[in-house]
Amino acid sequence: MTNNISDYFNSDSVFITGHVNPDGDALGAALSLKLYLDSKDLSADINFDITTKLPSNLNHLPYDLISNSNKDKYETAFVFDCGNSSRLGKFENLVLEAKNIIVIDHHVDPSFGDVQIIDSDAASTTQVLFRQFKEENIQISKDMANCLLTGLITDTGRFQYSNTTSEVFNIASELLDAGANLSQISENIYGSIEFNALTLQSKIIERIVLKEEINFAHSIVYQNDYSDYQVEPEETDFLIDVVRLVKESNVALLLKEQKDGTFKGSLRSRGDINVQQIASIFDGGGHVAASGFSSNDSPENIIEKIEYEIRKFI
Image 1 (cartoon, rainbow, N blue to C red):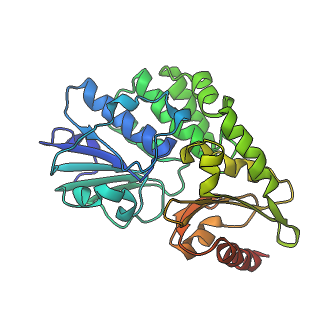
Image 2: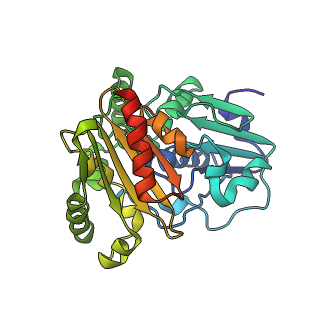
């Protein structure tokens, strides 16, 4: 099979998706492809398994393109930012039944896909997709550039994470030349926080625990917090960056209780500690400096296991 994604654009039916509850990178990559196909009058459906709501701080993206329905079967499925088919949620079977499955990602060793366009050293999936667009002489419109830059900004933490390379800045420059609106994107993602979410932030700061002997800071969001503060779960994704601000910490953890009582964990690292390796003990993944996982264990047991793993690096 060919690695040129354009060879699959004329498929009888095309489905575009990414991981459950997509972030800026998955949304940015998927929507940029959808925009291009639409511009060429090529039919494609785009949808995600969204268990909460789409993030309001990413509503500069063309959410209206996301389908309310989809076909029973597709010839070709494009999957973004998803290293394991189980993370496709309710669309897993739909994707796996497609004749052609093209996975574009920046995570290590995806477990599925007929065509895998992967670079685990890339900062974001949108970086990988940008290269592919350039390689295949696919013209990047202003709206596509906004989508691609969104993924680049969110997965590099505003160009602050260690995955921010000279190539990342070069791509950002090209996207700006293509018409991307950096000020609008940055303001929408980072420049404002809803009042209730800001109030909840103060509670999360109160809950931060610092283990100074291993430079580990952690905090937690409980299910009742969402109702108490009238905040949607997707509006709290930024809180890991609040925990990460603790100067004495080399590793930061934010646990978020889910509706079913399980916990979603976000890990961030500065220094030499590989949080991807730590997340893997919960079958999670990500990158050296930023990873995530889910667990049905108790918060106390999760924290204890992470502390044990951190000590291995000391």
